[in-house]
Length: 174
Image (tube, rainbow, N blue to C red; front, side, top):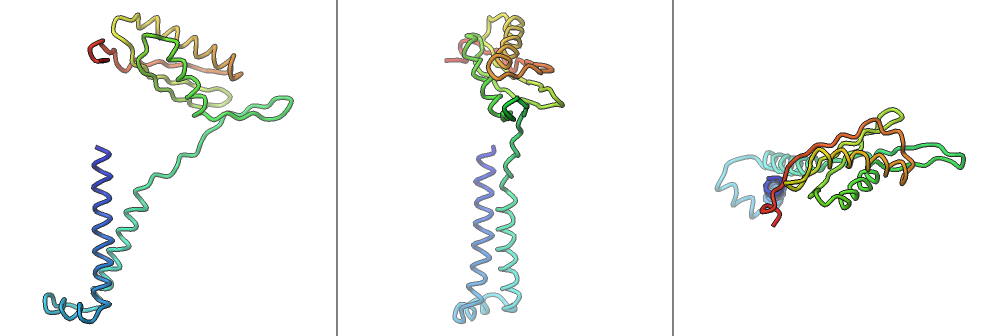
């Protein structure tokens, strides 16, 4: 749906900017203006103003359609040699790689939520049917805590929340 929305938005912007520039060009050319006057009665200033308004609206639509890039969040801690900062996105990617250790996990998506002096980890998993879901989730929680402490030196993990988003049957995997 998002793809269609973008295509529609692009068409709207093209129509607004093209129509606006077309009206400005029409008002700027005497022969074209005379032809336009025979079709529609109106003032040249109104057409220039309308064309400029359409062009500005099209450009505003285009500019407001872009999302601003999120400000990246970092976890920072002091060592005797200085400050170490790790982005929450890097931590999330690091945790997501743990999915390869679990044959029952089909897909995994991770978010790292920094809190005061701790972090929360939220993990969404898609698991294979037939797996012991409860055991897999508990083992995953333990492995996340272990890996963060051993690999990144992050031991202040307040909670690790694992949500099973789907239990995928074998025929859906093919």
